[in-house]
Length: 72
Figure (cartoon, rainbow, N blue to C red):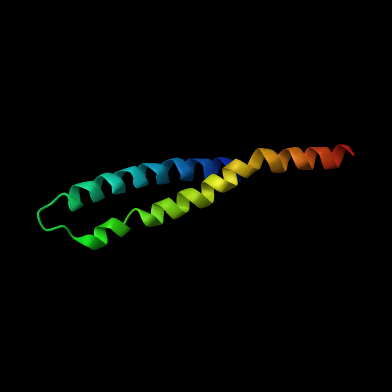
């Protein structure tokens, strides 16, 4: 498995973790006495999603630039 596929797979699994953490946060904050620090739990998976998402977003543009540079 090359690096791009590994990052894509990691991004998919982190998105599942993010979705579950957001659901857990909604449940925790809906309690009678909510624990406020739980609202910060989704921030770590969100940061990882932003980093890997930006990398995956830039892949086609970098590949196109490299292809054009090699042809010219």
